[in-house]
Amino acid sequence: MTTPLDKLKNDVYNNDQVGKIEAKTSVRFISEEGNRMIYEGNYPVEPFKEGARGTYGGDFIAQGINVAWESIGRPDFQPHSVHSYFVKAGSHDSVLRWEVIKVSDSRNFSNRIALAYQGHTNQLCFTLQCSFTKDNNLDKRDADHQKLIASGADIKTVPFQFKRNPNPKFFKYKDSIDDLLYFEHTNGNIAHAVPREIFSTTKNFDMNKIGDEELGFYVKFLDDYNLGKDYIRQSFLGLAFASDSLWLATLVKALGLPVTQKDADFFRVSLDHTLYFHDLNFDSSTWIYVDYRFLSMGNNRILAVINFYTLDGKAICTAVQEAYGFLPTELVEKSKKLHDKYHGEKSRQLAAKL
View (cartoon, rainbow, N blue to C red):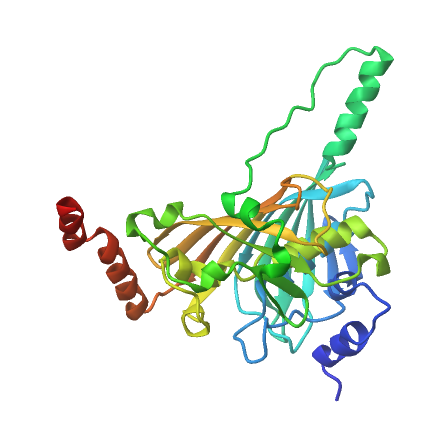
């Protein structure tokens, strides 16, 4: 018997004539009543690797954004913010049933809630609220402003903008990405280029500055968006899919320790995921720089802020995520010993003598 996962592999992964993210996140309309619309995913969400518990969070996020987008029906609208919660672990044994609630539609904004249910018990497993805006396009706003100036019209607003610059690692590696460690994963959908320093011990490690440690690597979604119908939409979905990938496993590096396969497998599950899209002028099938910090950990919750930049240093998206996780005692003790090596009492006494 053909399973939903078999269908995904046959229709999408083994078909080089379709855009992967467009097909993978596609849904079909079932019914509509009042402000509620029902959709069903054409394909299941997947675990990031065989045998993993539950399904990959980025799969939920991308399909959730797409189903909300389907209900908008306005071609010049794109998402600008997404707030989602992982309620229950997903399964690849069945597709998702989506209930989309039309919250609001105005001249410049549309808002939707998307609820994902699964299985014969109709279990709610994921919730998402997404706001869309008209022409989330900085270049277009600048061009429209110049046209107004040229026409002599009364100028009421100026499209002023500012963004945080990427951290120093971006400038260190942006011209030598090919020299970084390259690997593909998550069912062949994501590629990363990672600095080798992530796999080494941090020199002069200070445990009091874990939340200040700025990390970074490069990511892209492995797809040909020219095969799909909407390049911009695919680029949004590809970035959303990849936005939940890899960075959480590198918490070990923020502790000053080298990331290894063993240490990267500490227990953690995503609780929520928020995205803010600043612009539509990006291509997530090309390298995107991921700049991030672990802001805090306490009560078994890990909070991080992740920024995404194009290779010319333009900020295109920011993610905020909290995860539930436990660090093994062994890791914490190693981190403390590394801190003491550089900042313990004996080290301070030695420095004073020198």
